[in-house]
Image (cartoon, rainbow, N blue to C red; front, side):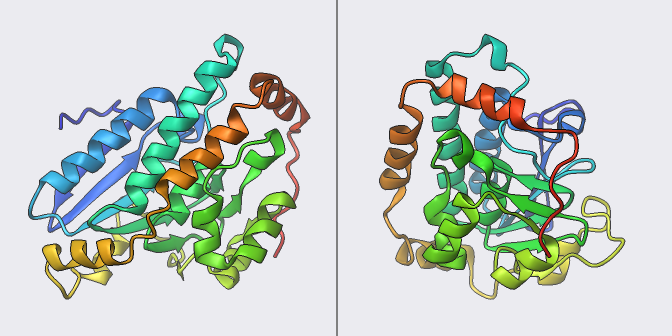
Length: 255
């Protein structure tokens, strides 16, 4: 896979770790169409390298990922928005079932589809300044909810999503959304905190078999839930109304 400094997703491989960096810091690493496609290609490239045992997902800049990119909303239609959401669900499902150990490094805003990416990883390290939010249900989208429930339980997941809560790092750790705090003052790209995990104690083939044994076979249901929610007429209008409702002063995360 060719890597360029301006690539919306950078993939670097070394010492058994494939590091996938979301690289649109000026847009908060929001998921544009090309970014999702590059991320899917990066997952394939990581799996294709027999030396890789773990994939690290991180974001360049202040934020991990601020969710669904809305910068092209004026040119979108219900149909194009649905197609984009389907590709994001495809990425989430691929990450959830990847035959490699996955590690997410979250900082700043971890929002919407970005929070779903974070939740889909096995190990989830979260910086003290981070906050998590799942606002998609506010414009009628069901995305990532079952995977969230697998992490924190169905009742709690329903409350977080339907209640529109923004969780500060401490609350995310307490709920099980994050598995460990990111050490204070650590640069996730420069200081490589994932190296402290070392390689899995089982070989890669065994890890892949373990992943398959734990497969919930619910990917089709996740996609169906998304399409049912997004296919309701007026998707663009709902997103536009949601966007208009946002203010510069976001609600403070709940501790």
